[in-house]
Length: 359
Length: 136
Image (cartoon, rainbow over all chains, first blue to last red; front, side, top):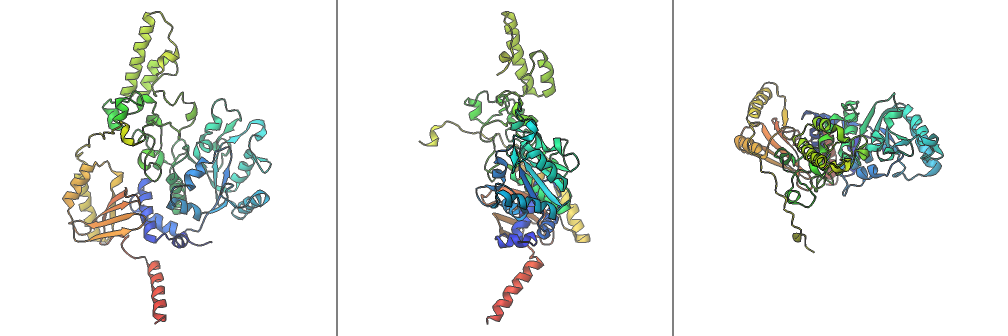
């Protein structure tokens, strides 16, 4: 089924105008100039299918689910089908030796040109024995596959930053792709799971411009990870007005007020959930009444508690400094409240513990 | 059990009014229309990329008015391409299949690209016509 993408799309019932419309929206999401949508559509329509090798390591398959199991066939899914996915354990029909042969054939035939997608972290403990495929450790496979890749795309927080396997105490010695691969361009698409359109955006950019999109200091595409959840949150006006839900069932929560004091990590989390949303644009965590967990940031699992307000100090002695770093009005308010608790405790000669300061 | 018994009533934050971000767009549109006349080069403004409130968009739409042509495109959800009272200025809104707005543009062009048939598609159409003729 080789041939230009547009022919393959046409066979699946996607017309050129549908595709043009999709590209216009995609370009808009990627903060590209409005005319880029057309350039993107032309380049992608004519593109031959790039060979893609997808290696799953220490992962839960949530990233694959996110991208391939939308409730209805999306264009993201179709574009994904259109790439020449030469190796993906979860999706491929082949198994065992046949699968491994497909991997090596793809690596040889497209040496230097294929895109390598990795999901899951790579364990280094016990010589990598914690996770093996076909008797070879993940770290071996990654090093071999990265050698011939044009670029590596780390999908999900585990591949990008180590994710949950790396969470304290990191029993398997898990590391991220960028900890091991140093000589190839790497794009991190973190999130637990990542947003499907971000992945299509990166692929579209690669097919259109022959290069990877602009990245931030953590290797994430700036167009999707340039702003925080808080920057674009529809509850932001409540934050600005100082209206906060104090518990998940109080009047503030019912009125849809800001979830900052319930531990929302929106102010320090860079991702596009607030604008792109989830499940075909249905909703996203904050809209469903729960604070952001910060899943697209490094070490989010060890951030000190999902329900602890950001300004709650990690070290009671340094709480004033911690509040200053956050610098948010509400953060100061929380720490002032903590300070009141602390002086009350002092007055009664009680020892203040960290637990006293936590909400 | 009906969901009505759950006493949650989300009150949307009060709609912010006019921000003053819309009027400068009229000047930009004027520039774009002049460029179209002089060089024939089409251009567009991505409305979803700008800090515009619903009130700003209403103001802009009201100022630009409605023209004679409205095009509706059914492709993965509905899209509308409506000419404004200024010929050559088109208000383009893309919806997804659930009806939500996915992106919104003001295009300055004699005819928006999306409306034109692509030569490759016309070729496919001519093939179909040939087939019809050969069956006569």
